Amino acid sequence: MSRVRLLSRIRRGRPARLALRLLITAAVAAIAVAAAGAQPATPALITGAVTWLLLTARHDLAPPH
Image 1 (cartoon, rainbow, N blue to C red):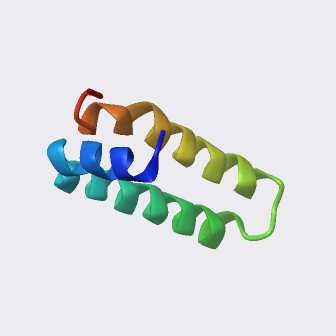
Image 2 (image 1 turned 180 degrees about the vertical axis):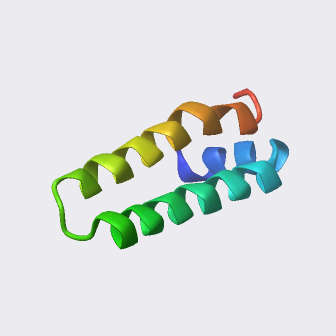
């Protein structure tokens, strides 16, 4: 997908909800690092947060044309 097309889908979709999802993901990742430190579980927690973002963010994008 081209960059222009992605930006268009974001702009026509729900950009505020998408931004909120990004903030939640960043907060969960920061909390995981603060709580677990440099443990093997830290990358797994961050991966879980990013996976949640990828699976739910598509609903905040406008349908492709």
